[in-house]
Length: 58
Image (spheres, rainbow, N blue to C red):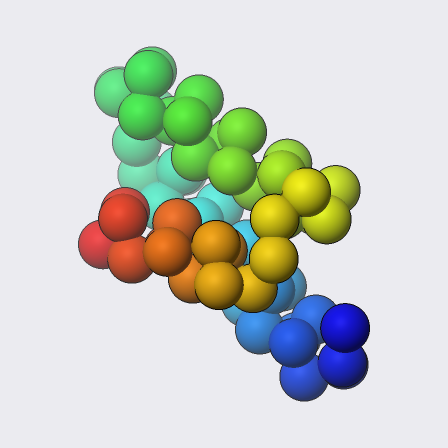
C-alpha cells in the first residue's frame, strides 16, 4: 500500500470517528462505525471498501 493510500485511509478513519462522535445517541449505528474503523485500522479491508464505508455514513 502506498503512502498516499495510507493517508487516504487515515482521512477516512478520521471522518468516520467524527461521525461516530456525533452519534452518541444512536448506539447501533455508532457500534457499526466503530467496527468499520477497527477493520480499517487492522487492514482487514482495502481502500475501495473503506471508501464505500465512508459513503454509507454520509
